[in-house]
Image 1: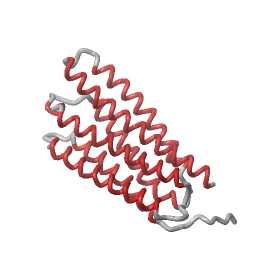
Image 2: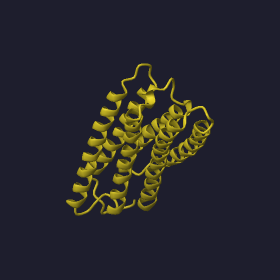
Image 3: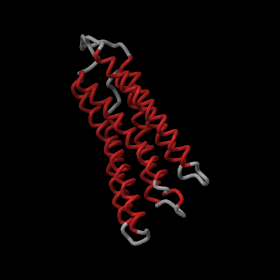
Length: 208
């Protein structure tokens, strides 16, 4: 039986889990934008609240690292995973903020591909939230990072279709510029989820 001097104290895992659950809250809020009569300002404001909560969790995590003599796994990996989870939330907040500030939801309809991208992000968020508690045992994680990477590829495909639509002449030039910025944040969020999954894979390999 493998013996380890690593502690089993669970505060780090709880913080990772809380951070990932906030990502689900973030994608749920973005999905509200697809509902008829959605209050875009409310969605944007609530996303900001969730982002602030995520920042607090990240601060708690870093404080915990600095006050813990022996961590459950490498300090650098804990820092990286915490920072990457926070990065995802920053991108999700930016999507809601830009849609509100640019008034894009006042268009007759947002591009179908934009909603499809949010759906991909929602799937990635739920996978990540389900995976974080399993870091404690480092078991049953492979399916998570494989599926998260597959979804990132799906997001890339949808993003290319979104760009084709934006430059098809369907929208005026100013709207295209605004939507392109939103599309960039959506793609960045999708990539950031993959970076989280890749980091989890790295941690699991090191600890196996």
